Amino acid sequence: MQLPTWSSVLLCALTPLLANALSLDVTSSASIKNASSTVAKDLLSYYHGTDPGQPTGLFGQPYAWWEAGAVWGSLIDYWNYTGDAQYVGLVQQALLWQVGPSNDYMTPNQTKTEANDDQAIWALAAMRAAELRFPNPSASPSWVELAINAFNDQASRWDAGTCGGGLRWQIFTFNKGYDYKDAISSGAFFQLAARLARYTGNQTYADWATKSYDWTSSAGFLSDDYKVFDGALVESNCSVIDRIQWTYAAGAFMYGSAVMTNLTNTTATWKTRTNDLLSSMSVFFTGANDTHVTSSNPGIMTEVACEPLGTCDTDQYAYKGLTAQWMGEAMQVAPFTTDIILSYLQSSAEGAAKQCSGGDNGTACGMHWTKSEYDGKTGLGQELSALNVFLANLAVNSSAPTNANTTEPNTTSVKGTTPSSTSTATTSGKPTATSSKPSSGSDRLWAASWTLSLVVPAVLLSLSLF
Image (cartoon, rainbow, N blue to C red; front, top):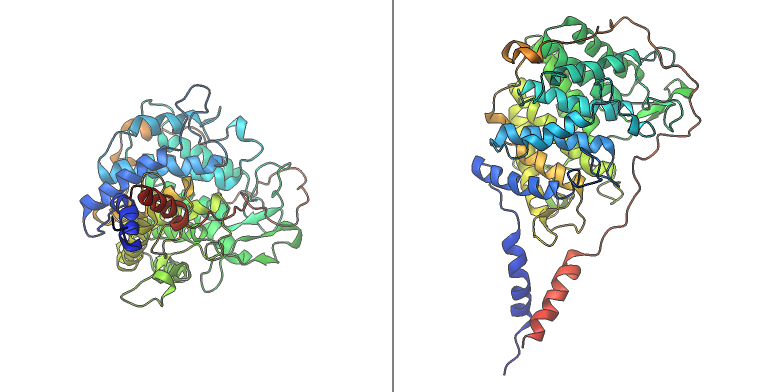
């Protein structure tokens, strides 16, 4: 009997793998919804909060508390864009289980890790639920009440005693990083304030949004050419800035500015800021397979601070997901951004789909969207980022977020008083000694090439059949 050629053996081995790869046509809503459905299912395979003894609303190690909030916010968009309601109960349970005793996403079991940006991610998920009129099984707390309570917490922590203002990264003095002020904490607070201003019509929130934006700019975290830098230690009066750039920090300010543009009826100042921030985000878009970006090849989203070198940690795999989500939402409130944003989102989604070809099911997603083959490493952040970049492509044909005038009565009744933006609240206590903002997760070694780990065993199996 004639032995098969190597080409036929490889084809035999690869056929089932290729058949399971995710299919995506970014011009077809049905195709995007199908791809999103597949990835949403894979995403939730990491969740065990409904199992006995497992924490409700959380994903467990190595995934941080904030990332769970990002997942539930993403699944609100999934419900809205696709019309698939199968996860509504799960999202409701998670968002309400983690609210804490004061309904502000200050949960006692997260004291050792919860930072201002972490709290803000959960608050923004609740804000999205309010804006989209996501079903709430209880009249109290309403979704917007949760967002407002978290906002009030953060406004009370505004620290005018160091660096002229801003939020510290950490909330508690005993946590490493309390002596650091960062762009994402300011950006998430700015975005939350802007969205609350638009939703409620309360000028105080708009004043806080302006104050946060202006401080970030004056501190140098937001440069004259609209680059968003990570942050600085307070011991230097924020004068020695870590100039690393992350997608989600830029995305937070871009979307917040888009909301302010919508709120102020396309005021020139905020429209210019939105456009210039979006323009500066071109640094995050790389050509497929590292080719040159052109008008016909707008580039694929890349976490440039860590992705090219393979040094991204567990948290950082999810940053592109938040960025894609906010870019999609920016198109809804600021349609003048659509041409640029949609071209970025479509090329990025096509790249992400090629990465969603790994794992036992053939649809697990990797991070390197510029590469044409699965990079060999998947996880919650990779799945979240892929899901959000797919969903964001549906935003352009969806209606803009609502405001309080178009929601049910139980979402407009808010408890508590919003602090004035002229307040000089500070966080008490001595900062701990740290040398820099610590990484939010540990670096990992890259897995072996997928062609070796998947194809070689399949080849050997095929040979054994002859």
